[in-house]
Structure formats: C-alpha cells, structure tokens
Image (tube, rainbow, N blue to C red):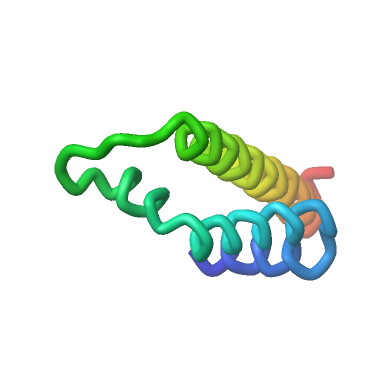
Length: 91
C-alpha cells in the first residue's frame, strides 16, 4: 500500500493529464451529487438523459484514471524488480 501511495503521489506531481482528470472528477463530484447517489446504490433512482450523459462521462474519466494508475504501478514494479535483480547480481 505504501508503494502504491508513492506511485500515485508521483503521478499527481508529474503527470499533468492525470492531475486534470482527477480535478475533473473532483469537480463533477461536487457539482453533481446524483453521481454519488447513483454509485452508492441507495434505493431506486431515475436519471434524466442529461444526467445519464454526465454519469457516463464520469465513469469514463474514472476508468481513464484507473488505467493510468495501474500502468504506472506496473512500470514501477518493473523498475523495482530490475533494481532488485541488479542489487543481487542477477543482471
């Protein structure tokens, strides 16, 4: 978990696109409370066509953010693995 935290902090500090996606998600959370209500599954809900479009956009941003995070964690794992192999003299 600590390593994951470090990778996500690195993304926030070094990747403008990642920061922009996070900001959009944060702003959408504040502006559209129906998103949280929808995702938390509290009973029956109904969305307007506009709300549905907003929810789809939100979900796409969340997927993009998640993909960026997983990709960075994957690359960091390779970096750490290579460093370890080098340290023990395997490469």
